[in-house]
Length: 497
Image 1 (spheres, helix red, strand yellow):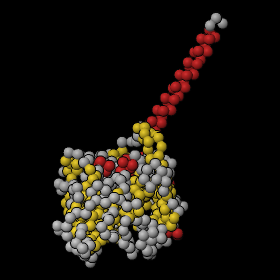
Image 2 (cartoon, one colour):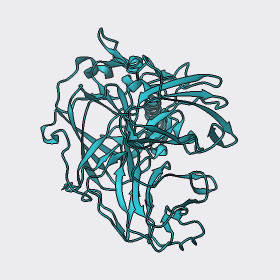
Image 3 (cartoon, one colour):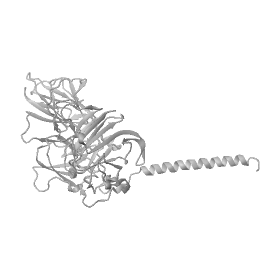
Image 4 (tube, one colour):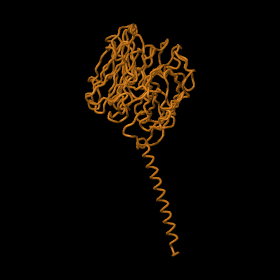
């Protein structure tokens, strides 16, 4: 072998090996990038994997991961979500038209943000016609906290197509449960809700309200700061001795606190469900998760002074006309603990006799989603699209353990159902049944909840910090034998989060 040829051969071999190694890395990275890509259009039924919680496996959903992005094939006898509607056979008791528009960086309904307050009686058949005047990305209306039939839930790509500019969509549902609720778009929701595409809904009992004053206060932060009902404060004239019911609605992504130093208050209801035997509290704040509602009750002092309820940067002041506004007060150190507030009452079902038990473990890690690198939320260890599909059957008693690994707090919202909180970090609930549709799971907290699967459909179970939802914190609760023809993306350009 000529002098130096052995060295050249070794150098060439190292070059070849290095080139092959680099090529292998590039090929692997390309495969990882390609596998992370989402199709332009797909069914949510094709996402992730089915979990059955110890209940009977559904062979159709059980194999849906192998069906590809179209999800399981439709089976004879499947219920189509389009058939799970409110009544169509009688005239409505309340009929409303809401016209959605975009005005610069704000969105409006009937020219205002928030949109109109809707107030109906329990048992009314409500008909709302949504008209999209000028929202370019399309729009829907989700009835947050109202356990409507699935077709009326207003989730683009799951229960309907987004309403395009110039189009309309009609929602019909019976307002079965009295309480405080709200409505908002579930199309590009992280931008449209923040931009003002929402309003409040109050369902009053047939006998009317016991309070002398029934007031809704929607807390929302626009680009220029916090507001209540779109203003920088709210004043309510009320005479000494009159009773006030203040319905607080948190339409932001963040936890809110409410408190007053001027009068004892009672927590009358949470997420539209009455608290059993609420007691007056002083020097304690009430927390509202994103999407949550709390009804407070208090009496205007006989001395004729006003009551100031602080909402974090804004306030509601209630008192006699001309009475001076009380000064701002600092938030108290104590918080009303709803795990032990009020007294026990029957649930109507036995959580200890559950048909299915699920885990909803929230984490966070680096990864690729749709070809984009970043930090993404995980559910049970998987990133979108590898998220659970929790499968239930009609009438199942369901328990769910929600564990937050500690990266942030998460206001978890289950569509179409209310759940009772059983425990927090292993500590059992001892007060009034704490019934929620929006539950803030704090850092390193674990909650157990339970509910009855009594509303067939395909339902989102997601974080209502909507920026978290866009980063993957979305799962679905699906009833066995329910099918949706709608798709994410596609002709409807559906983008629910």
